Length: 390
Image (tube, rainbow, N blue to C red; front, side, top):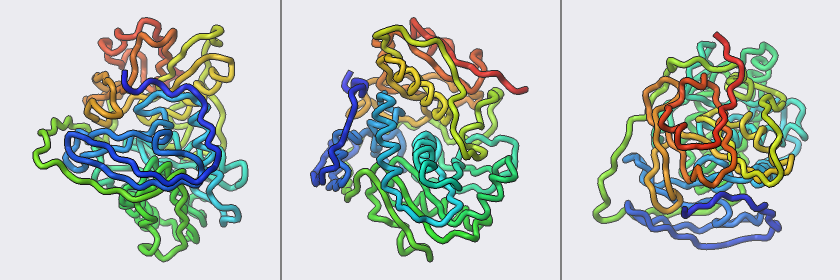
C-alpha cells in the first residue's frame, strides 16, 4: 500500500522551510511554493489526490488529521498543539472556535482543547451536515465541495448560547484554505445570524494557500495562522479522463438514531473535553486501528489517544463521504453504504485490514446500521457503540 500508516512521531524543529512541491494527477498538475516557520514540511503535512468531483479536481490530503491516511494520535496532537500555539495571545473574549464539517471538526476540537489552556472563555461549535432537530443558528454553502450545505446549530445550553452571541473573537478552523471562499461564506452567515459583537477574526489551517483572502474583505482585523502557507498553480490536463461522481450531496436526517454521545463534542456547543468512550486496555505490542465515523471523530480520537498512552501501537482514521480517486495519496479504498440511513456511499481510505491486530469502529449509530459487507472485511473488529437515545 502506497501510504503506510503514520505511526512514528513527527517533531518539527521549528526551522524555516521554503520548498517547491509538484504533483501530477490525471486531471492536471499541481505546483506549490510552500513556506513554513514551524518545521512542518510538505512531505509531513500532505499529499495530493484527485477528487471525484467536477467542481474541483484536486484534493490536499492531510497526513496528520487521521481522515484519509491513518495516523498516530501523538502526531495528530502535535498538529493540534502547534496550530493552537500560533494563535495570538490577548484576543478579546469570549472566543468562538468553529470547524468545517466533516474533515475539520476533529481539528477544530483539538485546537479548541489546546487553546482553552490559555483562554477560559472559549467555546467550540462546529458546522455539520446532520440536522439535529434543534434550533438552527445559520447555514452556508461550500460551493466546491462534494456536499455543499453546512448547518450551524444554536447551542442547547443557554450559557453557551449567550457566549456565542457575545463572542468578540471568531476562530475559524479548516484543514486547508485554497481560496478562502468558505471562510468568507461562514463569516457572513454568522454575522447575519446575530454575531454582532465580533472584534477580531482568526483563520487557523494546517496549510493556507489563500494568502489571507479574508483580510480586506471584512471590516475587522484578521489574523491568518497555519503550519505552512504558500501559493498554488493548477494546470488542467488537455484531455482529462471523465469523472464518475457519486451523489453524496445530502444534508438531511437519516433513518438511524444518534447515540447519547453524538452531540457532546461540538455540534451543539461545548466548553470542556472529557473522554467518554471506553474499551478494554490493549495487550503489549498490539497494533490497533481506531476508526471514527463521518463527523464523529473527536471522541474516537480521544479513545485512540488513550490506547496509545497505554503502550499500544495505534493509528487513527475515519470513514468519510468524500469521494476520491485511487492514485497519489490514495493507495486503496473501501466503499460501503452509509450507517446513517442517508443512502449515500461512504469510504475508508488507505486501510489494509490485515495490518491490524484489533480494529475499533466507533459508531454514533446502532451497530446494526453498518453495511455487513464492510464489516466482514475485518477479522478482529469491535464496534464501540454508546447508549442510544430514542
